[in-house]
Image 1 (cartoon, one colour):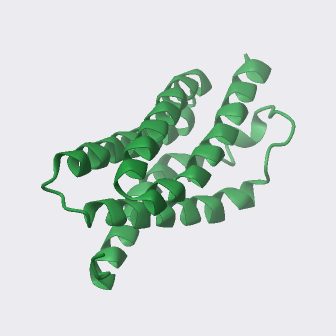
Image 2 (cartoon, helix red, strand yellow):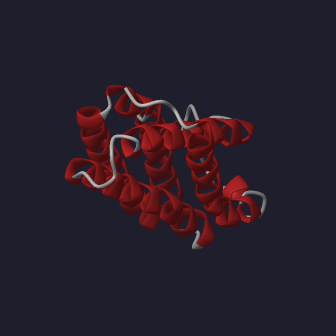
Length: 159
């Protein structure tokens, strides 16, 4: 077992938090002027909950990516797993710009479907390399499952 390099781990976590927060550039300005006026499905969490949940999930993502990276980036399975990590992260950020930035719940729903699938693939590849890394992404998949329900509900209730 490799020794944890806490500086590198912190870089992974902070990078995940910073990259993950890019979506808030589209989200935050549109909450009071657009999102607030949408009809939302039952069991929609309060707006204040999203920030702490995403902050936690991005930290878990950073830790998980570090654990996989630590197994040796030059190894093909590690590169493949981290490629899927990058794909899902791209869909994650894109969703905010589609749903909030473009104010398109339909485009958001298509994107979140791709996000969900790419997270599932990422978990599959991470589990093969480092079990804990894979398990750290399960809350993320569960939250995106809830977000998919919310996105679909908004499409159905507002079109």
